[in-house]
Length: 290
Image (cartoon, rainbow, N blue to C red; front, top):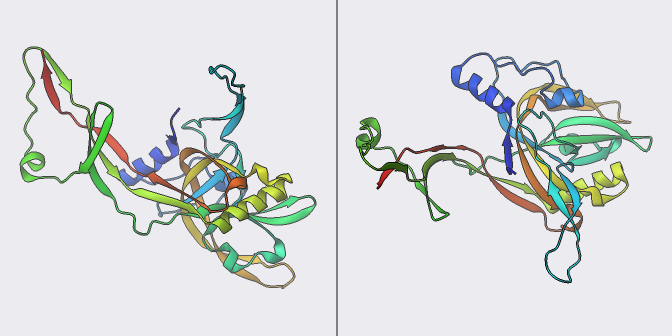
């Protein structure tokens, strides 16, 4: 299966951005509609950016494996479940943090989005289902990849006057077979997604509240989210008679699903993973085979 599944909603946004044509998210495609958060607020002339991510524990199932080694028992093992390109949400979202109403403050909301008040065991809680991505120190780079005997080597791609501004048609042999060489070009932006030990504890606490067992804190699906930071809204603070202002995200859509498997119950050190956000194109480079 593919580790990363790009969605049709990402292609829709990209096409609108490249053409300069108006962008309107289709009905039944935003996380705002799923969570009933400012679902009717439009992004207007603002193009959503890839600036949040969301997590879930529904991207896997356990199956009974089969062992071919003599004397070794069959054991259960996790099996990933792949998303379709038309999916608009995770199989099962879990919040990054869950707070009692009197614990929710302006400081707690910084860096998060998709704020929902939900009830568990007859008690209301504030849940945050989106977390901001950190694009600091990330650069967009052009690369060339060459694959030889299953080994891929990358090197920077630098356009030249001779080869790129004044290209010449590739020479095709009149005899034998013209064979592509397995070269490709790509645009790469290597993004690190990090969860600190405290953030992992927050997710485990959320699963303890929701399911009664922190063992359900298994991140097996990630969603990269495009969104616009909407207008300031006032969030009431329980028992204070006041509130705080908060930038909720609007027009939020999942641009890509990532299959993972991180059981946080056994993790005390946080988690970090690198995702290459970009695209690749085959490069027509030929050799002649007899």
